[in-house]
Length: 113
Image (cartoon, rainbow, N blue to C red; front, side, top):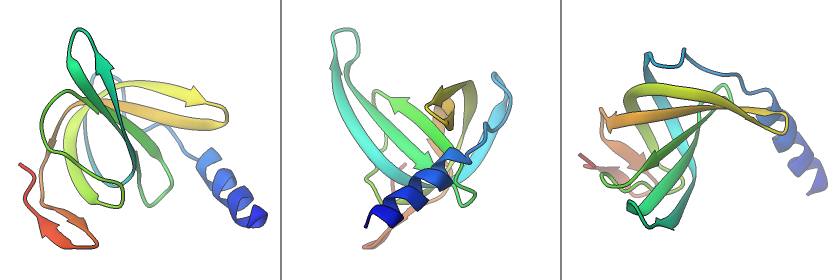
């Protein structure tokens, strides 16, 4: 089990920043994790951590819209908000995203828009 965790962390550390801040981006990614937190200003904020087939990681926060769950595959069109780094892992933060195709999960396709 420890070897699997080490291999997973090593692959995540190879992620690269995608796109240029302020420019549009289209991605086809897997929702790795979703988190919800409260905000006085916006009510509820949902954060999605996404990962593509090249192990590049993206982060998307939204206050309303399509609800995604971990394990869904989704194609998004949005804008690169910026680049961050957490430990050795690089993240691309995206905003103003919309789902451009149906999402897929273990249960099959679903309409999210």
